[in-house]
Length: 253
Image 1: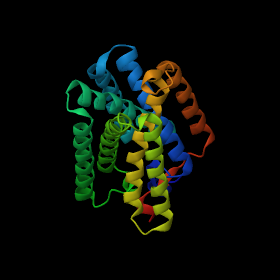
Image 2: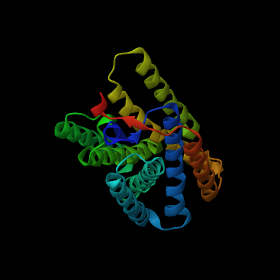
Image 3: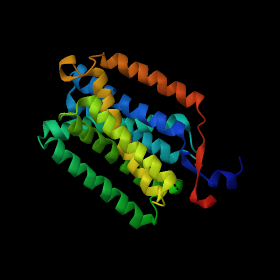
Image 4: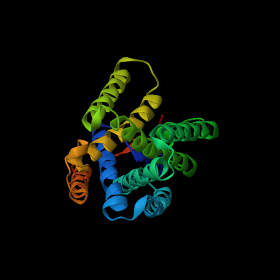
């Protein structure tokens, strides 16, 4: 690949059906793996957050220093953000006692502030701009806030009368409506992307909880370790099987 061709590519994957499938599996893995470390291993939310946040910072720095898109590195960073998001959200809503509504509203505000700051600084919040360090920092900061928001929002909805399966139906329906809007309306595809990206996280959160929560709470009571292992293998297999190419950057537009 020539230098000019490399500059025409972003450092995040093209947005395809495969991208969304892996993203949902990664968010589900983040829920089960985060709970495994903080609950099953009894490390607690704060220590679990410290472990995953450290890993996330390391991977984000590696991602920024990388000269081009690497699918394994990208998805490892996504998984680190979603596991960190799980433990951070649980720490905020449970250990700090602000509850699911308070945690969801706080994190939604942080997501919106991150997107607004990104737009003010660089003039775009499109993933096509993610090919230089400033955009990458905003991208990963927004993603981490959105992953944390999704955990709190998913727990909030599932904690009501809907339960885990009902909440999964709600979030799946929301994603289907966003897909319909993408193809049938003139709503900005950039805005629709971020709405869908955020909504995949609570879907993964409630599916992950459904897999490992006790039967008495409406879950399947599967082993968190076993569920995480199966999800991890599925993610690796799909990254290998499904096309993983860099998306076009705004240089190419």
